[in-house]
Length: 102
Image (cartoon, rainbow, N blue to C red):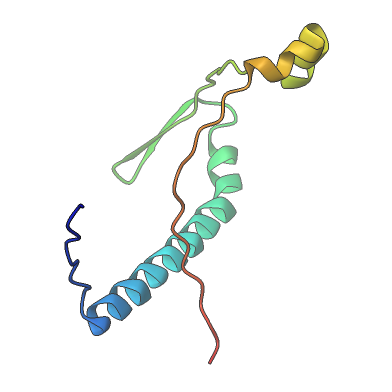
């Protein structure tokens, strides 16, 4: 018979602080990403005629990149019923923190 080892849980105050701080950081990231998205048109306008703009010690570069992806609808049409045999399922963990109003 296997012996069970006790796992010491972190102090509740430390856990509560870690959850709260992680939540705050994630909210700050969302706000900063929204701000950056709002500034994007200004940046795009600056590089409409030139792919490189230097100003205030910064270099703004614009380039086009390509990425190849499979068109699942086209593959399904080509393979028919065999499409499902080619699907791969990957599992991953998600840690969510939601604000609970008390």
